Length: 194
Image (cartoon, rainbow, N blue to C red; front, side):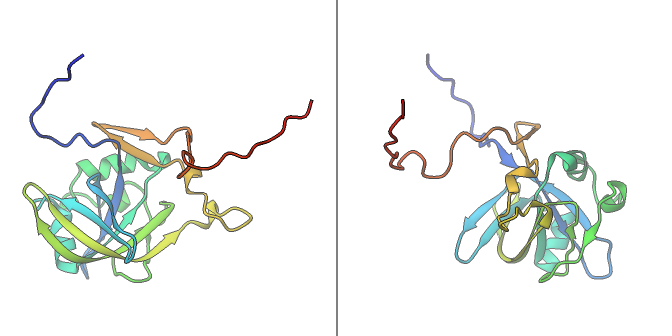
């Protein structure tokens, strides 16, 4: 069967659906939901978010050169959607969604207390790319919810009910089907006892 060819478009799915919090000094904090985000580099730890210039949060992030990426969960899916379709010009998203601003350690922008992971970011470069501008940022700190630490102190992030965004829909991450490097690991020869 031959595949159809479509015009160029973004069909890279699924994507993380994250809530990005930001705040200008003296103003109320705001949240924008972003799916155009990802890892850029390990050392130094860097991420990016892409935001349309007309979005309310764009000005805040451009002026302050900082933001917090907050991972989202099944419990936060309604807030995640709301913060992506309503503007901070019109509504206080923290208040409306009953979210708690959490003081950050390295940036002025608050994290979201209800999120299992808050990634504090400092913008290094803004790249105008067309419909969206990319904020390339260095990770200044990562704050995690201790509720997801097991008895050995290992962070069990996959137990948080993380969500993804795919082609207009939100999904909860599902069943584990492998681990990094499992395809090349040598299998131990185990003798079966009869």
